[in-house]
Image 1: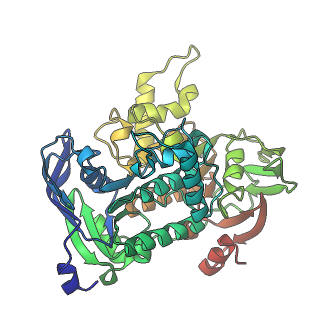
Image 2 (image 1 turned 90 degrees about the vertical axis):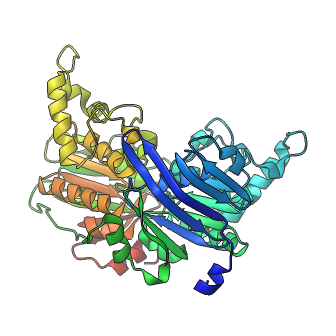
Image 3 (image 1 turned 180 degrees about the horizontal axis):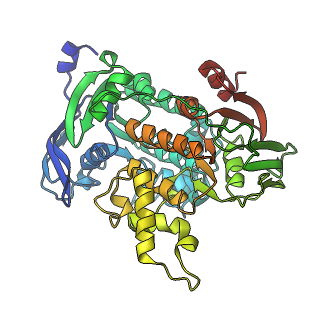
Length: 499
């Protein structure tokens, strides 16, 4: 869309002077946002920059303190009052954490608050609902039972369900807040194609992502926030590159780090998988070991078994056969970072201190089961500083932290028992470019201290920056191994199943 033609198009969304304060924190400082029909508008910034707060103000999930909002013909002068109901028929909002009902079925979740399937007097046909749900699932080409309870679904399926629910609403504006965080590469491609199809029909998208390469895949224009203020507004994506965006987000030049090798190749491995059978349905077995200072990545398609293998190493799942041992004769103390911090990584209503201490209550308590509060504070304080957690105090609720700092709290909890092995699934999911580099530096530092590190990731760049050895897992077995100075092209092809 040219600048001239853009000016002739009436915006579908106009936000002016939006402010929002949480306690003493000014999350938004007079922010403007303009979105036009049929465009994908990328909203970028670091964790805590105000992106999610701005789109929550737009949809009315978190009403803004002041400013004006216009969506189509609906104009709102905000003063902290509720206005989400006024915008329900105009905006669909896909949140970072899926807003689903665990005890309802896939079909029921898909069509909740969707008036397109009502049959009169507010009643809905369950048969029609199931039929329409199956049609949507078939369009996405995924294996999902419309009658399955949502609480039984994986993180990937829940994310897809939330996206399908939004796209099925038939509204002119759709907010996608970190939509691909839990998706495979194939699922991402399906999402991109769906977005392009809806865009061609005039639907406007506000797209938030920490995967900057996605911006160039899908976005038309970019707006960048930093510390609750505009840095760039409606910048054409063709005028930017990843390095420029990263620098604008952080406020200084971001230097992409490279992997280092601290592997003690002469040392006895710390942890070893022996004849592990990941699934009862698979006859294949897995054997590998990780030495002190080594960072090993488990990679492969969704459902390949890599996540299950990592959870077996961490003691979170039992193998169908085989065992996990320490050839060095050490007691295995494994620090575990789960793939979804919102589901199992931290407790929103507990403080930073309590969230970290949960990971090591046995080492922080005496023989009578009582915790020495001074020792607890000193231990938590050291771990939070080592992991670069930023909070006003360690008594601050974890739910009030930015996504990057929540993930650092999860890492601090994993380190609470002084582990000799770290198993991290999707270690930087949902965090910005600056926090990613801090977490990469943390993992390298742990390796340099002699820990064995196992990482599960779907991100090519992440593996390339971290892993000394990559195990490609396909069909519950190791199909290939990359080590040493492996090439990015080879890594990508192996992960995509091309080679």
